[in-house]
Image (tube, rainbow, N blue to C red; front, top):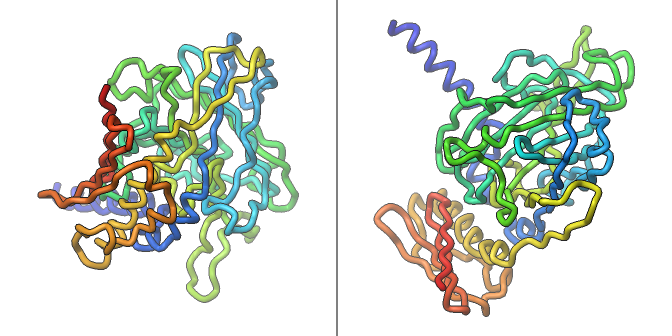
Length: 377
């Protein structure tokens, strides 16, 4: 019926606005200083194999978990320009032939959760989030969120929100397992809690999206982001309520604490996430070093062009054809002696081309944020 269709459409628009509301607007994002953003080197983590069966119960008592190393403590999403997080957050990872295992520990004096149904907007509660881009192309990536009562919100994103792409909200992590354990009392502001832990098993088949079995290739690192949303709340009339700004009457902004700061208030910048390398070695038997490939840092010059073009477009409603006019600060940010950078307009938007001095490597980025790497023999 027409009336029902209108109601459904309004509901979908509302959901889309809530999800997008968590990300920084395009204009605000592009005010951020490029020097500061690119000074934040992405975190790295080597994931070792487990040979024992992992039971997803939130306790992580297996010997493999005891041997796995913690990530560094989470920091603010914008980096050191913001205050240190109030509570400690850290995570571990393992893998076997079927699953990527994640365990996270979230210290918190006030554990609460009110979103109870699958695909409720979980980040309206305090939550833990995982973002996965298996092939490091900033496209076709996955998002997983859960709160202290293991309610799951998951989705597939063909593109980041900055391209005005629509995520697939009806997509699910098929076969995912999740469990939480609370060291404290739920939804009780009369006492102080200590922490909650979450344990997750993500099937590799769930992140394949029809392309193979999804099992990671040892030579190809994944891009991965961990994030924690923490709201400013008060205990009022028997429940937790978000504290409001007295001037605007709106909720105070949430805190976004992450494993690898991206430099702006948006987790939907896959090119700024951490790197995860899968090792064939069993956890606890060896230590493997992982160095971010040099070409990943070379790509940053093109991302600088992309960010500046977005800023230029927001002001002028067209893209810029001149690097000098664009003002990318590339000469100050990057070692331009290693490559030649050029910019040209296309029928749709633009192409920035970076040709390395080795005569073999060429990288191209366009207005859709699609970055292509070509290496000739």
